[in-house]
Image (cartoon, rainbow, N blue to C red; front, side, top):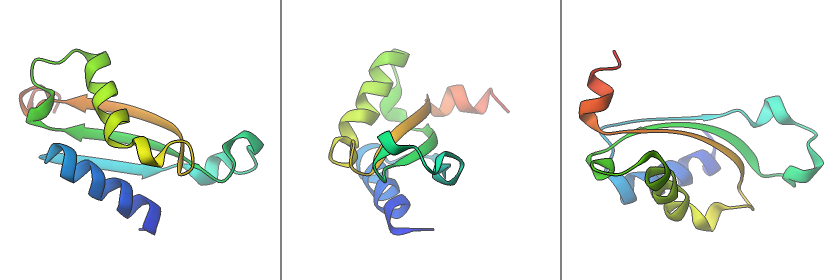
Length: 92
């Protein structure tokens, strides 16, 4: 795991105390995108009680707010799946 991924995960843990989290760095698949300027492409699946009662848009806003310092210097693109523990337990 590289330092950028570790820093992003640490910030998400601090903000949401997730019960489950997967952060996939897909930056290699997007190598050469000049507009990215060295920032990465990520896929995030995060499960936290903090998302209870929040709409999909609100959940995404919460994640973007938590990661604001990483945008756009470290994160160029971020795909988010944000669930409550109850929602995630019914997905399996």
